[in-house]
Image (cartoon, rainbow, N blue to C red):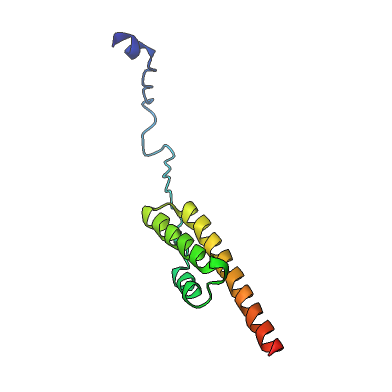
Length: 109
């Protein structure tokens, strides 16, 4: 529309004593850091489910590991990291409880 053309600023003409080669030039390069995808702890969760599924913590860890893998495939790394850390905490808790039960059992027997 003609109203829009008038609102634009006109180009400034380069003075004849200056050339484009004399003006400072800059280039901007954006480099993104390549992030490694978060670990999903799927194998650890599977072993916890099969060999030490105390209070169903291994099964819950397996569920969160699968959710983490799904998020990783979709490219949602923050969601994958959240599910992964939950699965890791559940696996650690199940491992500590299982080791405690084994130690208590061996001590009593």
